[in-house]
Length: 122
Image 1 (cartoon, rainbow, N blue to C red):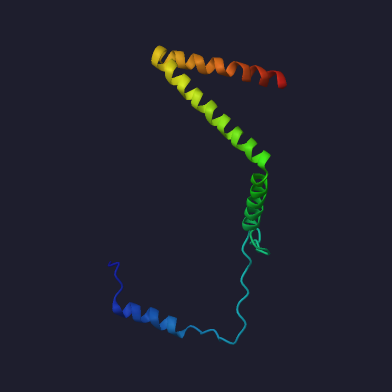
Image 2 (tube, rainbow, N blue to C red; image 1 turned 90 degrees about the vertical axis):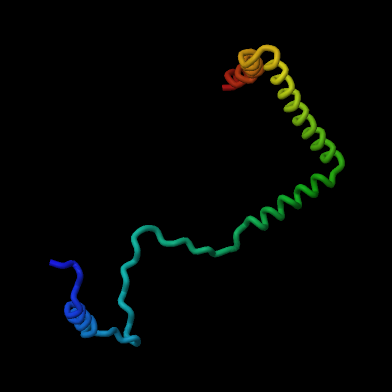
């Protein structure tokens, strides 16, 4: 038996397809069942990101417009940057003198106070 259909078989199939009733375009469409699951969300208002971003930029401008707050922010930023730079320089120096073990000990010693305070605070 061959899996390929002969031209006469295709003619019989096509004849059945052509004999099928054609739906009237003016007739009511068939009712389709609703899909299962939650209904799709309807977007009722514009996304809030542009307004929130505009609000944040306005607050930042207002804060940086105040001379005292601007100087405090710059001082804080420089202090954090200096602390990070000191940590890196200290770790590199300890690593060069004592290797990986000494750098690990330095990291553990630096964390002792933070761990102790965290445990006491609950």
